[in-house]
Image 1: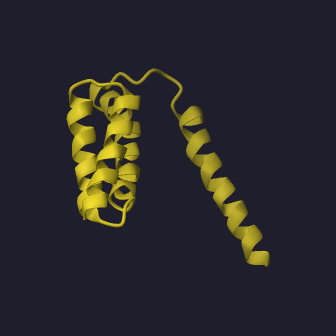
Image 2 (image 1 turned 30 degrees about the vertical axis):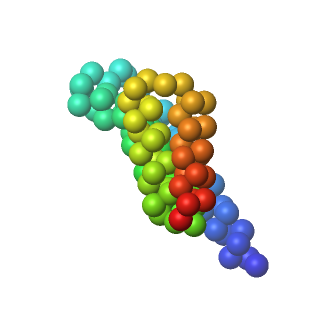
Image 3 (image 1 turned 90 degrees about the vertical axis):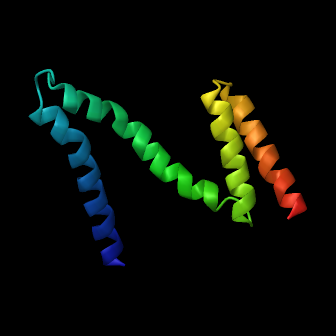
Length: 100
């Protein structure tokens, strides 16, 4: 049971270090366009990396998951609202799942 507390403490230290070190080490404005663009796109890349595997495992069949993902991509590229994209992607996955 003591290992659990050690693990929790280690996770807390690592989480705090990840958040505190940039604030303490980088005090001036970042002027490099490469680093600024890299930091701009990190949240989007992280979200995509976490979301895509969940999309593939959301249904019993990968075909229905990919169909819903395809509909979501098409609607998103056509600048539809988030509610429309999510609703139609779910509906597509549901309908394809019914027929498979």
